[in-house]
Length: 430
Image 1: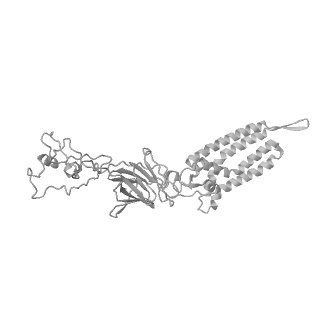
Image 2 (image 1 turned 180 degrees about the vertical axis):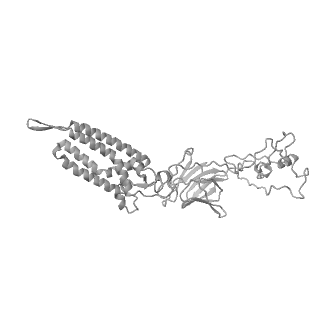
Image 3 (image 1 turned 90 degrees about the horizontal axis):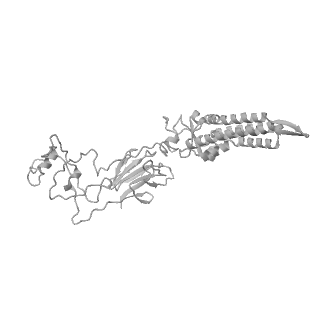
């Protein structure tokens, strides 16, 4: 990609140079084959009439037309799918549609039809010459028509010089809704996005979504549980293990105030309320009795202490998992699936074909095509900005606004608002 991240319209000179390079093979084949065909025409007299034998013209003219059409279809398909032609590659330019994608075969065909209108007229005149046998005046008919066709084609190609929008479009571009950019002086829209800026449409090379585990299920860098679990006091309540996908329950949770060693005056070991010898050893990393020599027991994880899980008294039924919903700033409300893509017209990548697609209207084009990826996690959602043009941010319930780092998942809790482009949604629970 070019160092300059701006889109630079292709100059009229580069457009004309690319067009001449693309036209030369087809024109050369037509000129050579038709010249051979006309040279092979014979004229004989029979019964006072002049008889022309045009079999050579039909043969060589047909071969020339066939080869030229095949070449044109190859070039049309190449430009329609990638914005490239032999001339575009040599001159360092690319054609694209308004959204930064390849222009498509239909748009390229329409551009070629307008540019080559004079050539089509000359071919029609050549057919009439053959049908009505105007061979004696063929040069006077076809010569001026070919000159007009060449002048018209050149005018169409360089018509971007008179474009009021900064040279973005020529006459044929206006009809086909296409643009032509200089990818040596600026960036290539086919690989980096359309006229709204880098990654504004991003048809290719998006970074994959990073799979990040919920901190509720397992703290990053937290020590794993020991091979032999510590003894649990008889009075402790057994709480169900948190799920990896929906770890948060609607039970209140009291976080520990400190993991520091007990201060002076704290209950001594073995006294009522003090931890057992096994638990003390585990907290200090001392192997329990019967453990193999050299085996060190890591300190227990905060989530492994079932005494810290508070259960509502008198409730024997399992707690229900909260249902996460988002409400857009236009009032629309959506219940979230496991994986959600948000944007003007979101498209999933490999492995995201089954994601929930949430299209958001944006007349001001402040939102990228695929702007955000949401991954639900019982207690909240992981939000990833997909390298959008205008960025994203999160405002927490206490009013703190934090920009999102592109490509890095950020955990968002209910009660927060997520801003993307000029739009916003509020995260809540059903």
